[in-house]
Amino acid sequence: MAVLDITDDGFALDGRPFRIVSGGLHYFRVHPAQWSDRLRKARLMGLNTIDTYVPWNLHERRPGTLDFTGILDLARFLDLAAAEGLHVLLRPGPYICGEWEGGGLPSWLLADPELRLRSTDPAFLRAVEGFLDALMPIVLPRLGTHGGPIIAVQVENEYGAYGSDTAYMERLQEALTSRGIDVPLFTSDQPGDLGDGALPGVLATANFGGKVTASLAALRAQQPTGPLMCTEFWNGWFDRWGGIHAQRSAEDAAAALDEMLQAGASVNFYMFHGGTNFGFTNGANDKGSYRATVTSYDYDSPLDEAGDPTEKYRRFRSIIGKYESLPEEEVPEASPKLGPVSVDLTGRAPLFDPAALAVLGESQDSETPLTMEQLGQDFGFVLYEARLPAAGPVTLAFEQIGDRAQVFVDGQPVGVLERERHEHVVAFTVPRDGAQLRVLVENQGRVNYGSKLADRKGLIGAVDLDGVPLTGWTSRPLTLDDLSGLTFAETGGAVVGPCYHRGEFHLDAGADTYLHLDGWTKGLAWINGFNLGRYWSRGPQGSLYVPGPLLRPGANELIVLELHGTRTGRAELRPVPELGPTEE
Image: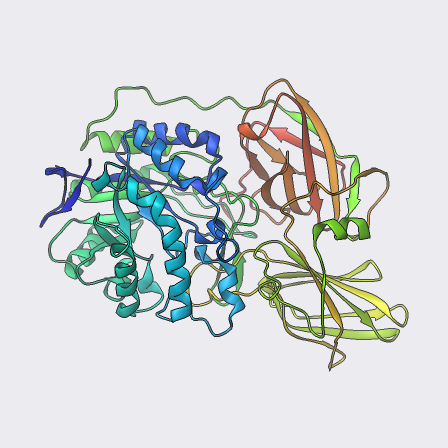
């Protein structure tokens, strides 16, 4: 049993003074076969605790349908942490931010236009409590008070940056305690938001990357007694498409850590190991302009995306060793990487081929386009189709696009409209009466922070053709969860429009590697059926991390969905990543 208590000047664990030295490690961003490795490296850096969010939107992709298997096997992750001798800070949300799609809030909440997120709205609270009911059989036996690794649980997440409804926070507190959570609860907010996000009687903690003395002083002003804790020490940062690769020097971050530990504060590194936004799970920000987060969540962390120790890891370990005892084991070396491998992608399956569409999604008819949420869809694309009544030049205007629309007429591309660039209108010439209009809309990631969390996807609102509403639509959800029904043909020549490309490669054994798609434009890639995530020539990210456990001796399959075009039919697996430039 490991019972954490809050004292007037710090923490006590089983009655002895205790400093939390923790690191963020999200199980859902790391291949399950690599959890043990990452947890061991956390302990070897000097951490005594691991911090993780719980992504409601992945565990409950459809109302009432829960998944705690595979990469979502929270129970196994917690048990592995315990086996490594690590405690756990559990952050179940319901909102988690984390540069994660929708901040972890399920998209199906947005199907109700009246529902108010992160509020005392009964519909929202019923959904939250239903998820907590499903979560408790995993969590309760693993609380420190029951002999498990969980020593504290967070209430909500950075709520002070969103609102100031104490009644809402109290409802969440009650929802946790009434279900048996009897370890200390805590909140976390940026220093300027502590007043709005604090919950009476609950430990307040602060999130910051620098200005350590001032930030801790702001926390002490809000909370005169109790532990000083930085729940998110931002030792790195995330990247967005079209930006640069964010970096923070090991020297600068280590100096801030030293200052924090010298002040007697507890700390949680955000992140210790970032991992990857596999599939469609990256979030986005919108502070006047929409900006989607990239696939890599390397975060310039002490452990890089492949789980290898960096200079920051070694610096942090040295600083921690000034204040806490370190394990005697040596710092582990980098893991073996797969040597260069070329993959020829000779098989093709055009996305708009009727046979492909039939196995990828079922269309629904309606007068106006249906949003993803109306279709019961969370991630992926929606393909919209309508008929254009007459030949000649036209202007097509969309009220709102979430988030990127490729427009085709009789199979020919006529334009791309991006929410990021505030684009709504495309003009073109219709070749014939009754020409087929197709609009392929990609959800590039729901907003995960701020006031725009109700971020619906697809075509939203009216679509006008020369100022007149265009009606008579079909909407086909393309979640792309299963590509096994696709039929590939070995063909040459150019393909107009989005197309799947397939190739095989053979290995003697698997190891970590990076997929490089030089000469490709934008899309997604799958290895042996696992969605690695998005690539985009816009950068900064120029490669996709491939966890070694995905690869197998013998034949392996690579499928790439290219949305535009490629000047090559080849991809390469290389032992080094390309995360992009660090300066404009």
